[in-house]
Each structure stands twice: as C-alpha cells, then as structure tokens.
Amino acid sequence: MKITGSKDTIDWYDSNAEKYCAGGDKVTFENNAKILLGKLKSNPKVLDAGCGDGRDSQTLSSLGATVVGIDLSQGMIELAKKNRHGIQFLHADFLSIPFPDASFDGIWSHASLVHLDTLIEVKQALDEFNRVLKPEGWLYIYVKEQKGSEETAIVSDSLSNHERFFRYFTKEQLSTLLEESGYMVGDVTIVEDFHGRKEILWIRVFAGKISDK
Image (cartoon, rainbow, N blue to C red; front, side):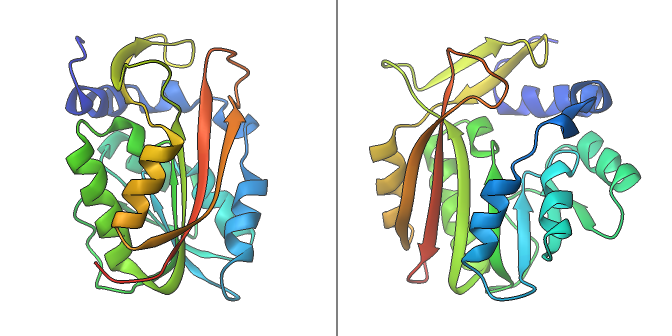
C-alpha cells in the first residue's frame, strides 16, 4: 500500500491492527495517566481520542476512570473490543465527536494528532476536545517534535515496518494552538522516545480548559 496521507495511514491500520499492536502492552504510560487523573475529580469520565487497540484506555480504567475510546480505524476498534473489557469503544472521528457538550472530565490524546493532514484539522480537533470537555476539564496531548523545517513526512519506521504519515509540532506552535482553542497550557515537556529510538523526541502537554470555543 502506497501511503500519501492520513487516510492511507488509517487504511493501513485497518489492515494491520493485530500485527502492529502485538506486544504493545510492554510499553505503558501509567505515569502520564496518573498525572492527568490527578488533575481531575474522583472517578472521572475520560475520552481516549485515537485509542488504537485500547492499551491506554485500559490503563486509565485500571486507575479508576470511566473511559470511552474512539478511533477512526475500524480494525483498531474491533481489536480493542475483542481484548479490552468493561470499556466502551466506538468507531468515530475525533474531528466530530459523537457526544454532547461538556461530556468528559478529561481527554487523553496520545500520538493521535500526529496523523492529521493539516493544521486546520489540528485546530478543529482541539476545538472539538474543548467542546466535549467539562468546565475546568484537562487535556493530555503527546505528539512528535518537529526538527528542521519539515512539518509532515511519510516515514517508514521500525514499529510498523511500513510507511505511515506523520505531522510534527514545535512547543511554541502547539502552545499557541491550545491557547487559541481556549486552554491554559499547564506543562509542556520534551521527552525521549518510549521505544528508544534516538532520532525521535516527543512533546507532552497537559492543558486545562478555561473557556468555551
């Protein structure tokens, strides 16, 4: 399959979900989940936006959250429903989240904005996250850091052994986008790659909702 953008990447995930996710539970982001949940009320309702096979949904659930996972890949959602129990998973687009305003205390967006084609879509996603967040809700974002001038790329990596589309971000750019979408940026940190790939750095952000969009 020739990858030209985000749609092709989603199609690839559909066809390769089980193979791609094999062994994925060896990597956890429990510490990040604890930080997010520590900012929320007890027994919060959390949206996992771009949940994949539900790995992080399960972590959040085990820490006491009521979790809803959504993903644009039908293959990933089927895998999540098969392997993760007691969690609601929906085939849905986080650019148009099928929930009313102020439905969630927190939103977890781990390595999902990286597959959006345009910055317009990124802004749309942040606005949509704002819409479904309750007042004083919190958003967690994890995206790849931009190096040099390249904002997007078709990359063949060791995790997928195939090409995928990625969008890269800078700390300043992401902070500005969040502020424009009604968030207070609480923490922005550059972190090393969780799979030990030296050429990749990630940006971790926790941002609180301060106004409606």
